[in-house]
Length: 217
Image 1 (cartoon, rainbow, N blue to C red):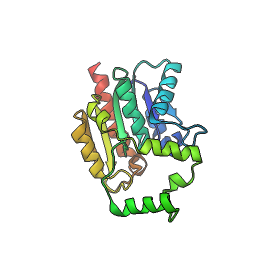
Image 2: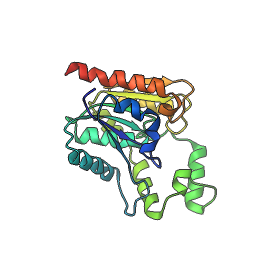
Image 3: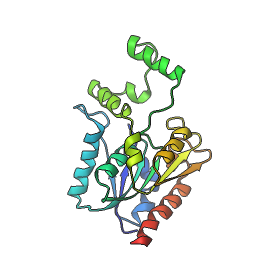
Image 4: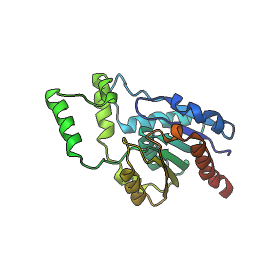
């Protein structure tokens, strides 16, 4: 593969989350592993994170690329694809976040009790954040990307684990109905980090999918 690949990690993680697959992709293409500040000093939105990646692309003089993204990184990937449709060739999104989860009374009650009365615990990601980090986190998760996903015309491979509780399969199936240019692969026994749980399968599937674009150019 000659097209550069941009890697976007999940919320609260870092580019190190791709350590197990890094050498494999670097042997085939130029790779850039982006690190996001998930507890920023200033309040940020999804657009701010997208602009941050765009600045990296400009600095690195990248005019076209593929994207491999996990969880929160998929939210940024969607925005990049919408904002730069002629720059992003193909995307591999795993454990992709971006759609509103189905309503769950138990989860809703737990969240309301925590936010209103401080009873119970927020998510582990949320608890670790500063005040500005918490507002940024809320800005991110409250944004439903259904419209952007439906508009997205970039060929996309969705890889989900059937044991993923953070971004469950019903979310993946809704995604494929919205984005006509997407296909879904489900890894049995894998969780939210399918690329860590099933690295060999992930590497082969991603390479095969991204290589299709190379054969068409």
